[in-house]
Every structure is written in structure tokens, then in C-alpha cells.
Amino acid sequence: MFAMTRRPLASAIALIVLLGACGSTNTGKVAPRNRNLITADEISQSNATTAYDAVKRLRPSFLQTRGATPAHGMEAPTPVVYVDGSLYGTLSTLNNISASSIFTIEYLNAMDATQRYGIGHDAGAILVVTRP
Image 1: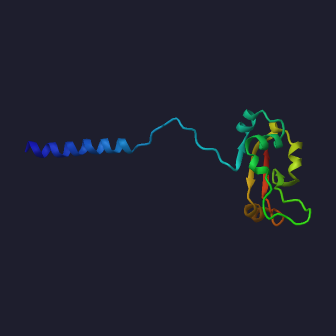
Image 2: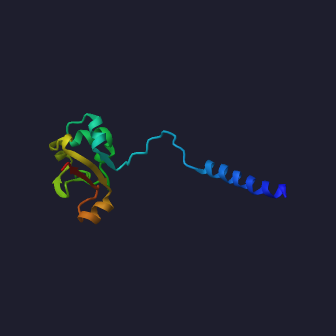
Image 3: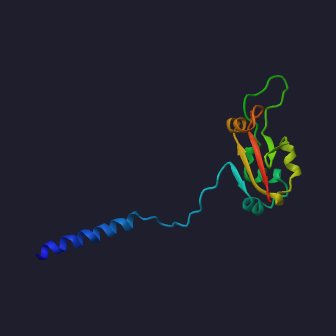
């Protein structure tokens, strides 16, 4: 009889130990950043003064030309800039946007930009959302 009562107790203890080992642990690691999104916190920590400065310091890959290399002196395509959902211009227009006014900056690849905004986004789009 004594052996029968010990078995359930031992099983219960083993189950508790097993469940404890499977639980999540906090290792102190910071969540990885989104490579296609720049947040206001990142911008403020970068000490950038314009949207262009912020992108150049934090995600320079946003500024790269993409797509097929054009022939005979034509410029390679660059991302199109949108501010608060409206077409704003070329990459140089990012210099006209104060870094302190930005909530987020997001990069959309060519396929996603074309689906959202239509043709003419061979190098994708940079979406700037300003603070309310």
C-alpha cells in the first residue's frame, strides 16, 4: 500500500519539475529590431536632424538603388517617398522633414509598394508617418 501512494507523488513531482524546465526564461536579451522600420525612439537616440539623416544613420539600406541597372546614362531607380500616405517625392525630399516630427519610417519593397500605390515603385517606397 505504501508503494502505491509514493508512485503518484513521485509522478506529480516529476511533472512539476518538467513543466518548470519548459517555462520561458528571461535572459535579458532585447527583442530584435525590425529591419524595415525605424521608430521615433531610435530616431531620437540617433541625434538625427532630418529624416534623411535618420535613415542614413539607422537603415542606410533604405537609400540603396534597386532593380535592373538602366542603360545609357539613365539613373538607377531609388525608393519613392510618402509622408502620411501621400506621395512626397524622391529621396532628397527626406531632407525637408524634421526628425523630431517623425513617428515611424518604414521601407516597403518593390512588390509591396506596387500593390499599395501602383506602378512606378521599382526600388520600393519609404513611408514616413509624422507625429499627430
